[in-house]
Structure formats: structure tokens, C-alpha cells
Image 1 (cartoon, rainbow, N blue to C red):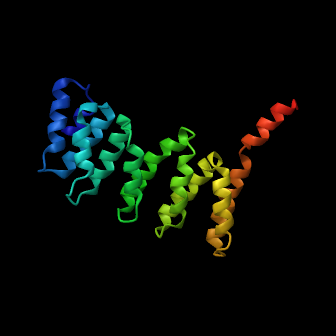
Image 2: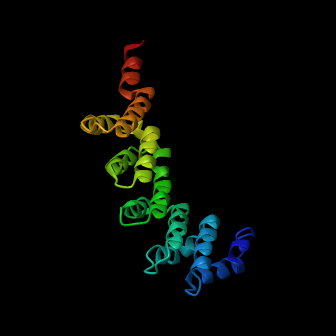
Image 3: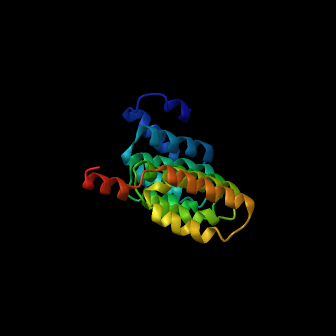
Length: 191
């Protein structure tokens, strides 16, 4: 029923019903659907309820996986810190992948912070997370190339073949990006 409301307009009556569903502890699936709908509708008045869902002590990760993107959709100022906290190894892979999706916003906004946030997770013990991080560094590594090159230089000491392939893929992606210092100096010299 809550998910069906999500396809309706965000009337006051619908918003009230969905917010009630979010705080109703009888059904975790309903709560997760409610968080998803509130994020879709961008209902800022539900921020506190969404934060409560994110911090829920109940063992139901789907609520975390829907509350985090909902808070990001609202544009809450600490959305990246919330995502980084969920990216830590003590969370499920699904929650961590959701956190990476929220962090993509930084890269898409050309914010070099994304590189510093992601680099430590290139060493993550969970292979799918490492792969997801490597893919993002291929996309966003050009935002902080010196930081990535420094990390890659240290990482080259690791001679595992799959590791080398990922490092080379990131390096190749970085080399395809125009270097800002070179383009600026070309403009200054008039060439």
C-alpha cells in the first residue's frame, strides 16, 4: 500500500500516511518502502524520521538501504558523512554498496574529496567492494591525480596479478584525463 502511494501525488494526506508507516515498528518492509517514498517525494519534514530509520537498532538493513538515499535526496548537509559511516566493513555489502551510490554524488559534482574517501577502500577485504571502489576511481580519480598516483606508486609493490590489472586500469583512466596544470600553462603561453 505504501509503495502504491509513492506513485500518487505527495498530498498532505498521502505524506501523513507514509510518515506514519515509516515510524510503525510492526513491519520493517513497510518502513523501508515508506523511507523510499519519502525520499522520492523529497519530504524535508520527514528528515528526523528518516534519520531514526538509519540509526535503527532493529536488525533490518533494508531500512538503512532506503533511508540513506532518501536523506541524500533531501540534500541533508551530512549525507556524505552518513554514507562514509555505512561504507565501513562492519556493515553488510548491500548497505556499503548503497553508501557508495550516495558518495557518487561527490564525484559527479567534481569534488576531489571523493578520491580521498575512496582510496582506503581499495584495500577493503570484500572483493566486490574493492571492485566497486576501483571502478569509481577510474571515473573520478582525475579529480585528485597526485593523490591517486601516490597511492598507486605504493600499491605497485603488491604483485598479485588481479591487483596489478586494477591498478593499471585506474592508471590508464587517469592518463586519459586532461591535466589541469598543462591546459592552464598552455593557455598562459598563448599556444
